[in-house]
Length: 467
Image 1 (cartoon, rainbow, N blue to C red):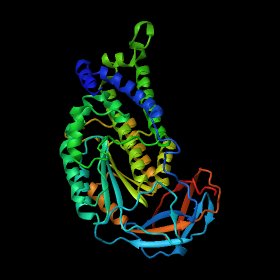
Image 2: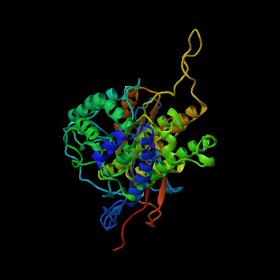
Image 3: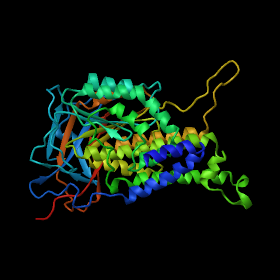
Image 4: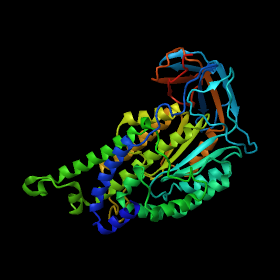
């Protein structure tokens, strides 16, 4: 298939490829729905048959400058589950200090952690850096900021991994190795993006289980080097966290059909609509649509990698951070219900989603002696960017993370480092003892003014089994 795809690209007219793109998107969605998945008995169990089942909640309290507030006590916190007050039975506060690099803690797929009467705080941070699609080359300078974070700001015991395209490194305390991956990404990703842009039908590869053609995969593997996650493309996450991606693919197809509706009066015999690929091949949809398709594919790829990242991080015990740098911003989500779902999945896995928008402000006019020399952004462009940034902030907040837009990468990474060096760990046994698998909303209040309280906003109550 890989060799056939490349040959087909050479034979097809440029616009005809987009017909294959959208067909590929639909095929990818179908493959996602019908692919081989872990059965219920094969998945890691969330059942606990002994001890105390306590819900752990990692809490960070920050002042106006993003610095941790460190002098709170148990009595300063008020915890609610589905609006019902809970009794805080465990309380630990901890400041991270440099320690010798340690091996990764035992892996766990549980979002509800079986713990003793006292909670065990982490002695390290866990970061998964997800490199979003698009050219990360703007004034934000995010690649340089990421290298500084990894080389100069991480503590020796902090675990870090990098994910991009269809590859990821292992988690490691070898920060220099990760910095070298980021350096190669900064040097090579522009050429990779150009290759993908010239072969847009590769959506079948980036959304489904198919591999990238060798001429692109070789470049991606050059970025990541050795130590790949199993030496294969990243596995698809379970079905229950992939439906948002399928919905986003459907949204892409619907947007394409709306574009065709707009040109209905001038195409087709007897008023009949042409096939989508024919309309593209005839140039009826224009360059704007080509740009839209490329941006949509990038957003869908980013969304898929966030899902894969959550699945990757779910296996790691304790609080984790998925740091996503994204040009698209909207992650292919077109509905606030999808945003809530993604945030809920992250919260359940104790993963804080930290998101950095790297595209900058949508194209603005530049004043000159003869008037503007750049196009004024359209209302739809402004709305789309506003919607994307608002959605990013909502997802970050609901998962206990942070979001940055229209700020330098250095600012974002310094705030992320500062705000994660001190934490409170609360634990409570839910007053509702019915383990029905439903999502439970958590709310935490702190009796301290002018602070930001970051914490996961819920979990799925898949709890202790009956003996």
